[in-house]
Length: 232
Picture 1 (cartoon, helix red, strand yellow):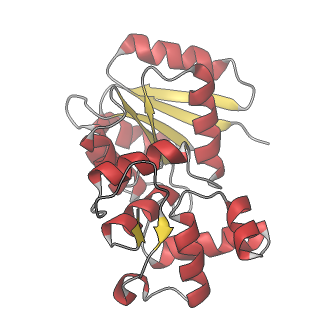
Picture 2: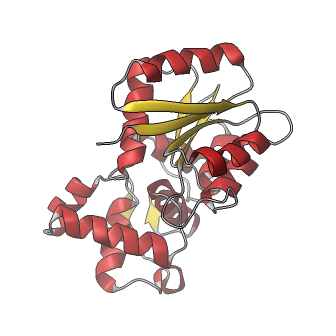
Picture 3: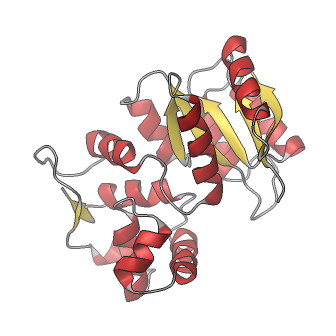
C-alpha cells in the first residue's frame, strides 16, 4: 500500500523538525512538506495532495481554523474525494479554538506534548476514517464547548429525542447509525450494536456525512450535541 502522505503546518521550526524525524522513521508514513502559516498550507495542499495535515491553530498570516475550513471544503484545489483530513495541534487540550477547528472540518486534535505513539496512532486512525481518534477526549471537549445541556460528571452520552428537522435528510436506519456514531463508536462497534456488517456501517457513515454536508466523523459528534440529539 502507498504510504500516508503527511503535511505539517506550524511556525515553530523545532517542532516541525521533530515531527519530520518521527514520520520519516515509519515505513507507512511519508512527510511530503511543511508550511509556516495557514495560507501557505492551503497552497501546498493543492500542489502536494497530502492525505493528512497536521495543523497548528495559532500562526501568522492565516490561522489554523481558517486554513482548516478552506482545506476541508476544497479551497485548496483538491479534486472531489481527495480532500485531506486535518488534525489540529494545540498547546492546551481543552480550549474553544480546538472545538471551533472541529466545527470547521478538523477530524481530530493533538496536544503538542502528545507522545510519539499517540501522534502516530492519531494519524493512522484519522486516515483510515473508521473511528473518532481519542473518543473520550473528543467527547469531553464537545461537552464543554458545545450546546449540550448540562450534566453530572462521568455520565456517558445516551440517545435522546432527535428533532425531526435536524435528521430529516436521513433514513430511519441512518438516524440509528448516526446516534451510535455520535457517541464516538468505531465502525466495528457500530456494526456490532446495529447487527450489520462493518462494510455496511461504513457505507451508512459515508451517506450520513454526504446528506448532512459534514466533513468528518468528529463533525457528527459536534452536530449531535449542537442540535440536542444526545443528552448527557
